[in-house]
Image 1 (cartoon, rainbow, N blue to C red):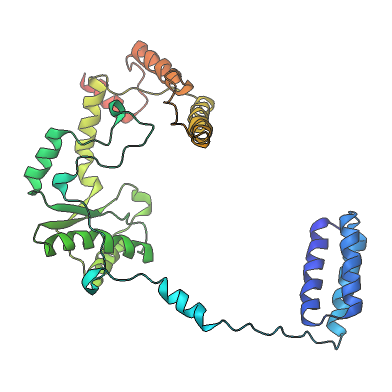
Image 2 (tube, rainbow, N blue to C red):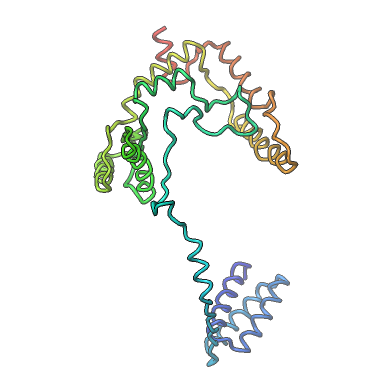
Length: 308
């Protein structure tokens, strides 16, 4: 008899003893547990099976435990914990920061210096956005049309369309774009697109526009060619083992070095400048420069080579 078989027999015996706690059955369960600890799974199984049979045939009834009544003060304490509305009886609402103040896309981490603040919006880009949108709130709802919507999508819809609505109610402008993330044709159907549009309308939302990620493929293709021609992109030749080593190097830093610094009450040190990840990237870059894409590995590179 295996260990798993003994465990199953014990579970059945314990369930039977809870309904009818026969003394002989309880004694056999104790003997079975001792045999199980001694790794005598055959003997343990025999005891558990016999215990179940004894409890099933017993006339002893389990005594119901009396329920404890909660004191009235307990209910009052729970009521005190309920969120109270803001002044004037109006419930507080989460509202996005006005775009004109949105200089920092997300908070800067304590261990990140200003030179690596990639979440800082460039002044010219920020000004161009405000001019293009009039300083209004722009949100999006981007489902992938590979199935029907669920309750989680309803939550996302409520937030994105809701923020645009709150902006309009406050006297500003607000709009939500419905963008289908149709980047996996094998799993997507027109049936799902129609269903999603119906669900959005059923919940009372109206997008300012309906777009598709695939609409931008030609533009993304041209941008990729531009990156290749300006040496802003390269073909990575790392093996699976090298990729794994690079990932482990970063995990070690974020999961150990930073945690140790935090436990010591010190700011985390910056990422070492010569990590294995950067070393492998430099090797791949030099390899790419030597090859000059003479042996293209993607359709994108092939097209670039043909045009050249």
